[in-house]
Length: 518
Image (cartoon, rainbow, N blue to C red):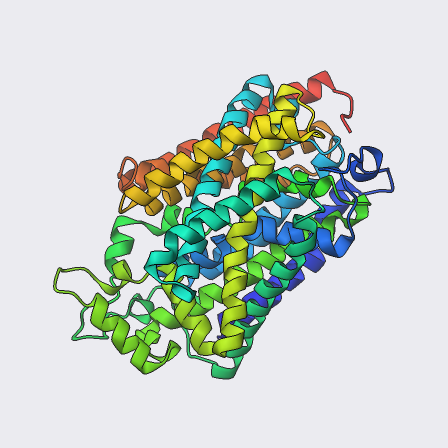
């Protein structure tokens, strides 16, 4: 628990100290924001600050800080480092800067900002790339909440009805003005999600479990459960790590709890609703830190679950026995291959928080992906509309862009349901697309900061690191080339190319002495 407590404190201090440093780089002022200057009653709508924060938090949360953190703890205590350092120095900076740039460019969407600072070619690539990512989000974030809801009400037979209900909600929320549905129900969903996190936090401090610490992460037996049954790695973590090396797979698995390119597609939605630039730090940087706290809590709960067979104490013994009777099949598979993140969420919430608390917590977990899914479609609609210069005040024009998006996402969803491993395949594509988008966003912000003679190092280092991660993943992942032994050489090459490219560009930029673009 010591590592967990230190990590909690570090995230809070990160907001107070490093968040203030990053804010000074951008110097928010009292200029009129797009929400006031360009109000249209549909997407540009000034909302109360607390609502903007709640909506931003839910927009970026999704299942990432929950499911991603659970799967990320298969890599052991190193996950704590990535959540804390990634969130403070990369993710929160990424979200704050992309939100501020959108504020200062009339609420511009990410592809437009990338085009402005990285060029028209990059804009066109990222336009397609971003829309594909958002469609993947829409498809993935229909299926995962439906799986949790069918376990709560209706069983397997109700899965299809939950999918239909969620997708129908997406259609309505995407088309209506942002203050009609999103502005009214998101705060309630956010409260449910925060209550869930607070309940689990209290549960951890009440139990005070003995967990693997960061300084013991070299001892694999501390967290793989290798001694549970006759020295056999019952949980199968060692086998998982053999096929999925910690670097770079950890940094793809835990995205939303550390850094996520998807967030940069969501920040413009709230940049169009903020009344003042001075609110950008609590809304954008603060929402990311809050998401990091949620990820940290779920990572710790799942660490307890995997630690020395601690899963036996997480839930009612009879429930565990019933579940184990189902998964301990004589086909050579291990527990970790059967136990999914949604199942762990259901078992933990129902046992630790009771019926009422567990139900409220599960609703919060369900609300996170649903509210990210609907704003993903909304972002896709606005990005395409901006690229086509297609106004969005009339319902007919909103439908003209939204209907094709819904059709494509529905086809992805049908394919996902028909393929046994469809969800995992889409999630892997989503993970890589997501982090690659963060690479483009970080380089765009770095170019902006350097062009305006600001402290560009705060995004240059994360940009180089995430470029290495995404490139190395293509080489090391068994789902791609599968040559993990080449990872160190690829990483060195990418660092060298990135640094040289930026140094050459910066030299030319300073020679040209461009005007400030703010």
